[in-house]
Image 1: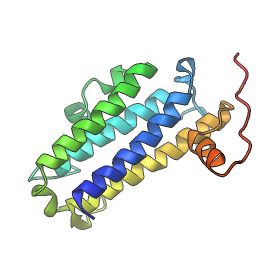
Image 2: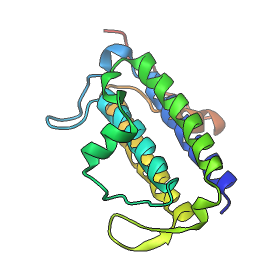
Image 3: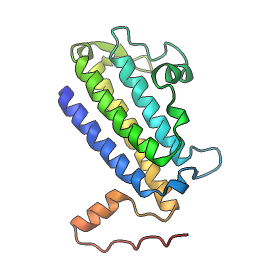
Length: 176
């Protein structure tokens, strides 16, 4: 797949993630599905941080995902993301980080033809590795839809398909 195709696919995934996050009321961004799990806000912070880290590393000629601990990689590539906890701020960061990733990856087009080692030590092209980043985001988007269900919110994608196929949509949850 081409870089343009990968970026386009990632932007679709990000758009869907933002659609889901937009449905969650701002006062529910601290909601956790279970003890010791990420809140809605922490889940979105994690996705932004991971994107910045992964894009930053694959864009380098000396890519090394294990250069330092994950926490230190995040400090290097995504400083300040964990300070943003409010809904509007996180939605803005999700949009901005996707735009930044597109710019950074486009500038590194030639570098993305090179190989790198994944977290498990296997070697692959950097361009192919970006599919991991997209899959990672889809995984967490799925988690976000579980959070929505626990908050009695019908996921945006479910509503979109029901509308497309003429199925009845769930009534909106009553405000608390």
